[in-house]
Length: 208
Length: 204
Image 1 (tube, rainbow over the protein chains, first blue to last red):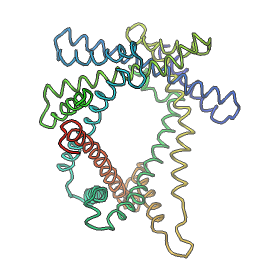
Image 2: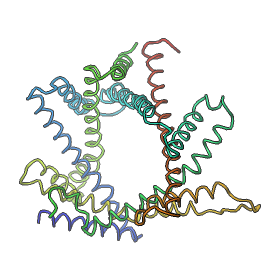
Image 3: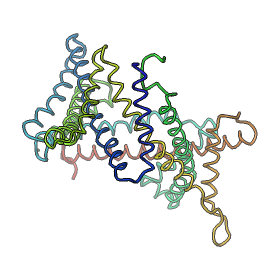
Image 4: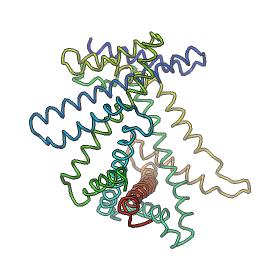
C-alpha cells in the first residue's frame, strides 16, 4: 500500500498530462498549466523548505558535537541573515537583502566559478595525452577551439577562427545531434517505464 | 573605497586562497557562501512561489483549488518522521508522473524529431556540387548513433562506423571543453579585473 498508492498517483498524473498535450481545449490547457506551473512550483517550494530544515538539523547537530563548529556557525548565520533582513527591509533594489546578494553572494559565486578554470586546465594538462587516434582528435579539436577563441588564434592565421567555426558547426554539431536524439529516445523510454510502473527506483527503499 | 567594494574584494581574495591549498580562510568564505545562497533562494522561493502562487491566492482571493498543492507540499514534511515518511512519496509521485507525461511528447518533438529533421538536408547543391557540410553532418550523426547501438557486437561495417562515431564524439568533447575553459577564463579575467581596478586601484 505504501508503494502502490504513489505508483497509482504517478501513473494517473502521467497519463493525464500526456493526454492533455493532445488537446487544444481551453479547459485542457488550463488544467495542464495548473499542474505544470502552479502545482510544480508550489511542491518544489515545499521541497526547498524541507531541504532548509534538513540543513539546519545537520548543522545544529554538528555544532552540538563540536565538528567544524566555526564553519557551521558561519553557514547558519549566512542562512538566517537573509530571511531576517528580507523580513525587516524587503527584497527590492537598494535593500540590505540585495546588498548581501550583490556584494557577498555574487562575487564569491563568480570567483568559485573562475577557480574551476585552473582545475579544468590542470586536469586536462595531465589527462590530454595523444596516445590514440581518438585522444589526438580530442586534443586537436580542444586546442583549435582554445586558439580560435583567443587573440593568439587570429595572430597565427586568419583562417583559424573560420576552421574552428566549421568544426563546431559540422562534425561537432553532428555528434551533439546524435547525443540529443539518444537523450530524446532515452527520456521517452524512461518516462514510459515510470508511468507503467516498471521503473520504481524513485520510490526509494527496497524493491517489492 | 566604499564598503561594498571592500567586502566583495576581501571575499574574492578569500576564495582565491584555495589556489594555494585548502585553508581556514577559504573554508570560512565557502561556508558563508553556502549559507547566504540557501538563505537567498529560501527568501525568493517564499516570496515568488509560496506567497504569490499559494498563500495570497488561497487565503486572500479564495482559490480553493490551491488546497491540493498545499496539502501535497505539507506531505513533504512527512520525511522527518519514520511513521509518516511514506506520505512524502505522494507529492514526489505527482512531480515524477506529470514530468514523465509531459516529457514524452516534449522530448520526441524538441529533441529527437527536431534533430532528425535538421540532419536531413540536401546533399547536392543547386549547382550540382556536393554539400560537404551536410554530408559530414549526416555521416557524423549516423556514425555516432551506431556507436550507441549496443544490440549487436561492434564488428564489420558496424564496428568501422562506431569507430568513426568515436572520432566525431571526440571532436564534440574537444570543442565543448574548449568553450568551457574559455568561459571560465573570461569569468576569471573579470574577477582579476575587479581586484586590480576596483579593489586595489592598480589599473584603470
